[in-house]
Image (cartoon, rainbow, N blue to C red):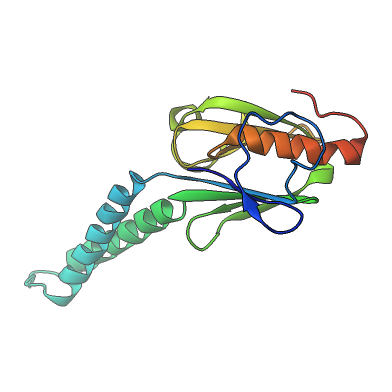
Length: 197
């Protein structure tokens, strides 16, 4: 999926990875990008099926021996269905927005969870050509002591942002090289120096 950037006049345009790494008229006022994982819709269907089974058991149950097993089955199916639905729909895609002050990362169709990072806290950004859910222990919002925080919705390219306190944030997004270039360009006026790889 291509990134959609806005120039200072508000026009959208596509900025490929071939642009040079310098502050100039090519740097958009706002850069936006996203990544989507269509395979997670299958998991959402499984969650919906669990939820439907729980409702079906509650409404049309022929169990007469004991109420406790029925309640446990209904609650278990409904809870599992809701957890699977939220877990997949919240991380079916990620949207990234970089303006002159902030890096914003929004997940899912309603944008929750959302992370806003002031660029004043960022000391560098790097391109990672191969981010996989296996590295992070699955899809979604992840944290690993040796890797920091990750927002992983699919395998493939992403970027890694380094914060001044030593934390790192990895995000899978299409055209991650453009995101890195824009973030680095935003850091130059703040720190007076290039954000090296």
